[in-house]
Image 1: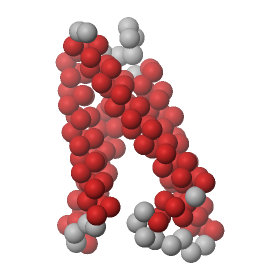
Image 2 (image 1 turned 60 degrees about the horizontal axis):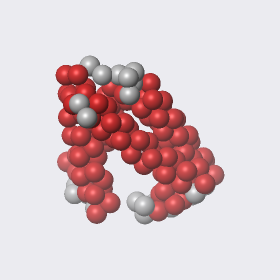
Image 3 (image 1 turned 135 degrees about the vertical axis):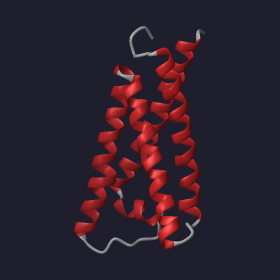
Image 4 (image 1 turned 45 degrees about the horizontal axis):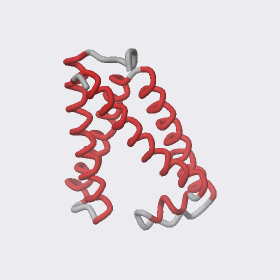
Length: 139
């Protein structure tokens, strides 16, 4: 397999793995908003709170999922750039929380590591994609 093709395949795996992650949380958000909030030990107090979690984790998460699949099929580089920003800003938000509010718990720390790794993977893939200037055509 040539390097350009290898980077395309690895980038698609990255896009689909991320899409799968967002899809799982999205479905949980749609069907059980409280289950999403249970992960961070927050009790939803009213229907507006349920609606907001359903919208953000369910609706926005599903939109991100759809776009990631589209980019995996049509524009790999744009998808990788989007994920690099997304995972990087997720990690940054946790670092800001750690700095301002204090140390993260087990959940936040675990996700800071995951988001940082996904950011680094995305950055490395993006740099390689830049080198080969690949798109979805030809794979």
